[in-house]
Structure formats: C-alpha cells, structure tokens
Image (tube, rainbow, N blue to C red; front, side, top):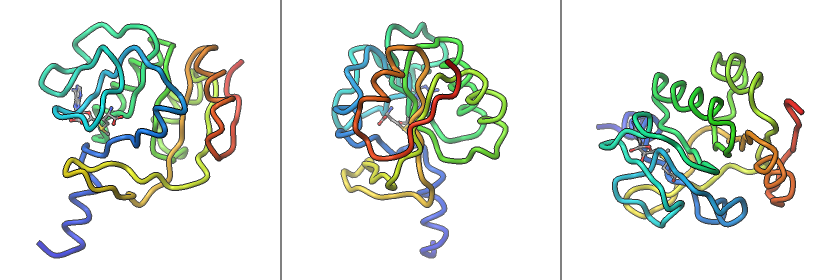
Length: 161
Ligand SMILES: C[S@@+](CC[C@H](N)C(=O)[O-])C[C@H]1O[C@@H](n2cnc3c(N)ncnc32)[C@H](O)[C@@H]1O
C-alpha cells in the first residue's frame, strides 16, 4: 500500500482516541458509549465497545462521546446524544454537512471551535493528527458550564440557551 492509501485508511479508521488532557479538562464522566476494545486509559465507569454496541444500551448520567466516524454510525450516535441531552462530544469541524445542520445546531447547548489540531492516541500508543480540526459540543446546562470554564483554547459559542 502506498503512503497516500495508508494515510487514507488511517484517517477513515474509527480508532482515534481522545488524549487524556481533554478528559481531565472536561470530566469526570459517567458513561462512554463508544469506547475502544482496549482503551488506553479509563474515561468513565460505564462503557460500551463495538462488540457490545453502545446504541443498543441505556446511557447514564453525563456522557463523553468521541463517536465512530463512519457516516451512518456517527449520525446515530449524535441523534442519541441529542435525545440524551447531557454530555459532551468531540466532533470533526465540518459545519456544512447535514449532521451539523440537522442535529447539532438545533439541539446542542454550546460548543468550542478548538484552536489547535488534536494529537489523538492511536491503538499502537503513538499519537497523530488527522487532516481536520475538532469541535467540542455540549448538551445540557452542566456540560455547557464545563465547556465554558474548561480553559481549552478556542472559540466558545452558545447555540441554544
Ligand atoms: C473515535 S474512537 C473514540 C474512543 C473513545 N471514546 C475516546 O474518546 O477515546 C470511537 C470508538 O467507537 C468504537 N465503536 C465503533 N462502533 C461502535 C458501537 N456500535 N458501539 C460502541 N463503540 C463503537 C470504535 O471501535 C472506536 O474505538
């Protein structure tokens, strides 16, 4: 496989894990409904991986969500978070797509356009940045407060009071 194909495969993979400093800045969380089979560190006491299917179970309390990137799953996880109404999601910065227009903008409380590209953790323990920037999105009053006060660099914006 040439380098470009390899890079494309990497970028389209679901296995880009959140760096711990982001969870330390925003947590603690009660539930991570899309967790790796072998997580690099614990994010929440209640977790579901792809074998268990986070969409097939009840979500509890304040949710951390860095969802799988494949379009169908991404939409389903975001719809579920919008319905749950209590959590923070880490999403790709692509506001022109239907996911943002139809689900995120109408339902989320607030967001941060992150100033810097994130160095995600890869399954082999190395870190890397995909080609896109990221946003943090909050649903619910408490998660909005966490976003507002977290100190993560970027532009904080209220979406729905
Ligand atoms: C972008 S990673 C984020 C992992 C972790 N939540 C974090 O913040 O570091 C998305 C994860 O969702 C997992 N996943 C894929 N489909 C899933 C499903 N139906 N239910 C639960 N997890 C799933 C993938 O295996 C992957 O580890």
